[in-house]
Image 1 (cartoon, rainbow, N blue to C red):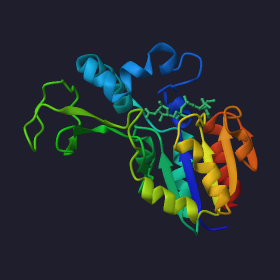
Image 2: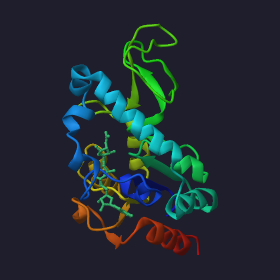
Image 3: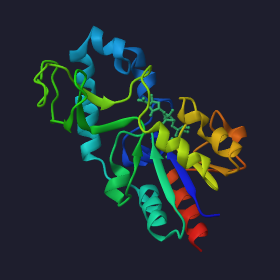
Length: 229
Ligand code: OAD
């Protein structure tokens, strides 16, 4: 077994204080994702959407990695084969922990995106609807995050990694949002063993050959230590 592909979700950052989407008290139990995470919601009320992401960005900037992020960085460093780290998270806690080449399939809070010309630049602390793009000057600034109805980033690269994976590991994700929820099935079809590390069985728990349940800050370092021997 050489090639490991890891998918992380909000659960890995929960113990860093960032909360999740679908747990009790999660973001989508308090807010309507149709208003905050769709291009239509943004078109209806850009000021409201940007205020929400300004608040989220502030929380992300204050957050620090926990032992689960640190363990994955150690695995990337010490594993003799390849470790591809794909995240649905828009925080930078994997990078803060020392991980490299992290594939941010749902974008990141740390850059801004021009909806008119596609230019990206470091996100300002506060983003406002009429902010002009530094490249084309049009007032089309938006968060560089993928919304429902949009295509996640880096799908070609992810497909290639899944097709050559020996082990696919899903960490801290509910398995409800596609295409990420389909990665375990794709990896399995390509011959990989599949492992789930999550607080509780996810929606697609039947796609995993093995599962360990508990808080990421405990079960991820335990799994990495066992793997590295
Ligand atoms: P969810 O909120 O759907 O799921 C989080 C998962 O983490 C759940 O299965 C929890 O049981 C688990 N969990 C919670 N605390 C944990 C802990 N301390 N340790 C381990 N596991 C824990 O979040 P995601 O699956 O990441 O998309 O959500 C997927 C996407 O839906 C997000 O990327 C976001 C959201 O809408 C976009 O914004 C495009």
